[in-house]
Length: 226
Image (cartoon, rainbow, N blue to C red):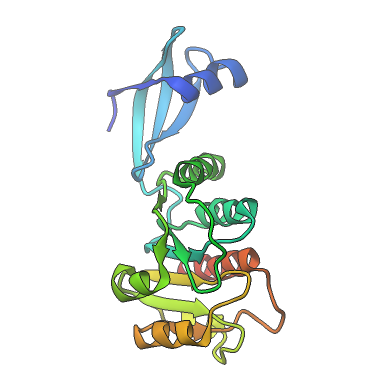
């Protein structure tokens, strides 16, 4: 695509004008959050908007070749769960599902805040696809009906299979990673997930914080599928 016009308003306008001090003639890269990046040249700047001429379109620039879903248990500390959202976005996930598990301490849903964290992380790392952040769902409902098809993984400290072994030969399958809360998954939850096709995997010999486990698992997935 070339010759089309792009208009930036709101936060994007303010960032270009006030922070980057952009001027007509400057070249920028814009993303739409739906999977495309655009090479553009600024043609005009007003108090309300920045107008650009699009010179090139790049579908799925900096995106993984498969779809990755992280279903992460809610954490007692909201800030730590936001770390999961931020790092999951940087590591290329397409979908983020907050989970209510047996050992989750009740907390309020902050979907708007989580979506804002994902948006900021998408911009910072140069992705063009904004992950979908869903409303919290019960573990059983996700395992039974909400988990997409593909390679399904559930890190668990008593699992025997190393994560890297499970990732070998994944082919072009989409990947689902399900991570637990501070107290971990119960044996009943692991049994339920195993019955639904989830593979229990080990992340190593050390006990990791819940947010660290999520980031470690996703980093391994990103390296395996890239």
